[in-house]
Length: 224
Image (tube, rainbow, N blue to C red; front, side):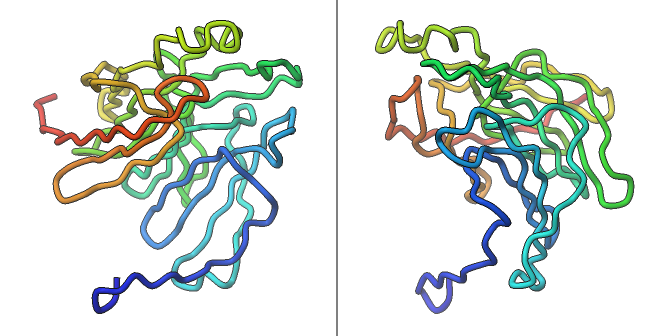
């Protein structure tokens, strides 16, 4: 925002087409993980790219990928000097409908100094969920746990919606715990900070059904 006007600056293109990936910013570096090349893809990407905001026109660098499976709809969160890539789902190659997916709970954090470290798995898949850091902890909002993934075309409008859980991970105890719940599920959208609030606007409240609802939350610091 410059002098009250929105100014758009185009960065370098990604090395290849990609959608349904996740990204996070750590310092002056933006990281992008996973996704798929085309809507018809039957395999997920295992790509991990970085772009320096000091000189974005230099382009994206390919970095070593996380040790786990390729995935679409992972959750990416900046935590200190690390970027963490969590959950998502791998494409199994089954055309469907629905397209075959294997829902994942594994989680990894990357630093330029030491590479990838696996952290404890999430208690349940959170594919397409949203994540952020708050008070030194990871927070993951909502997400598809895969429990009805094979029946999405069958249940359609009767789908109960995705998980409303908010999962918190404390690096000190290395444990995931339920940190709260949101009033309704929203996935495959974005999360941003606005003042002292976390805001999730729009997204899917059930498979292939878009929502105009907006969630805003304040994260209170609690004692460990």
